[in-house]
Length: 274
Image 1: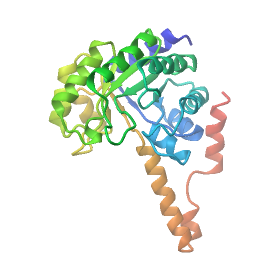
Image 2: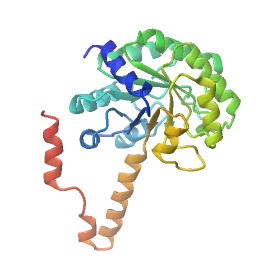
Image 3: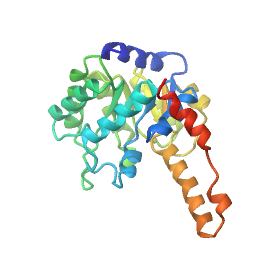
């Protein structure tokens, strides 16, 4: 499917009534399971990908090529639109971000997220003008061939500044970002304020506001157009693994060896061949 067609297909999921739930996969089998469950689009998770490689997220420890290969695999296996959770766009300059967007189009991705993080613990959020320039560069490179999400990480980087968050998201929309995202606003009122300020640009929410996990219906009622899970499905799976590990340490083989059957795994893997 050509980039422009994929763009239109993916954007249509955002603009329809209710929007979409877009879970994040971390390997081939998890992607196939999500596709088999009926989800219409999936995403990568930079946290989960880094963890599978034994690395930390947000510190430039995963390369652009590694993430592109990973995202391309998920798309080839499932045939679904894949949104790449591509941290800060993998580069120091807006030109680097443009190169990442172009490579993502060539890899068949449907969407890409560009954060205003820096990878520098001392100054984790980029200056306003730099952040806006990077989103503008991403949009210019995208040419409506891939959905660009402009994201500010103020809240998760210890900067609980709603006004600055709205200022950044509004600026990203003004330079052409297709979707906007500010993970974990403090509460539903803050989320509604963001949605109102940037309308009609669709807003993505990572699970819920920080104070309470809401239902999909509650988030949709508030005006959210895309709900992503980030690393949380991976964290859930790792929680199950830790429980099984503890059971094994205690000598409980039965509890340590429950889970998906080989037959079910075979069914899911067969899906990738069809």
